[in-house]
Image (cartoon, rainbow, N blue to C red):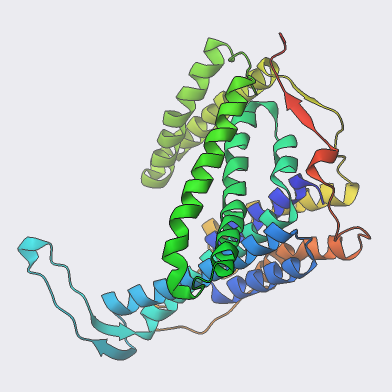
Length: 363
């Protein structure tokens, strides 16, 4: 699959997981992500980073439940009470402990499941697509931002690989390799990652990598003006019902300013490639379906349809879902269907097979 298809799928999973609070839909999304992970190709470092993100997601869910237990929660179904101190109101009024209700634990579980879906999706994406392919598929206007994201995507696999090498070296020297020794491995891994990043930055600076002329002044001013326009659009849309039409005008103006800057930035910077990666028709249709799914789930959430929201503090009402919402959630499994019928789904071309360069047109 192409990087654009993977990015569309990750966006779909993130929007669906964060837009709904219905545990049934979140469970469907989580199962879809696990199904895609079973079919997605992974390299050695990609598999390691996926396991790390899985562990991190489970830890975050456990932390969410722990915080809900320590802080206490209100609700009609009180399970137990946690004793704890309380600070006077003139010092902040912080209170630890108290009654823990089933409603509070359910709300914490919903938040943790949504985070788990997003982390699992990014773990699959990080293992299935090399950062070099992601960088090559980005538009010229977003090349510098994509370069920063690419370095960030390579940070986790390289750090995990450094930890594995340091642990093996310590084991060869007879040192302990248990869980208690993990804090001693963090400092060498962090120092190695910083040194590697510094060497990469110095090499890129010395070679003038991605140097290009800036866009004209007016498109840059339009891009700067898009932020207050979008903020004004959000404020008038959500806090003034009589002036929502003005919010829509502000939103269109902000989007137009961003589009103007995007076109000007693409013209100012030229990116050359030795070989382009075509997008098959099936993946194009899947990308369109992913974008339509994002719009559909946001529309259902704002309109209050398809039982997209669930409030456990309303007495733990029974869970319900609609066929339309379930269909949007099941759409998150489309990469599994595409990968199932691809003969080379488990292999990925080496990053060196398709080099790309971005340089100043004057050079």
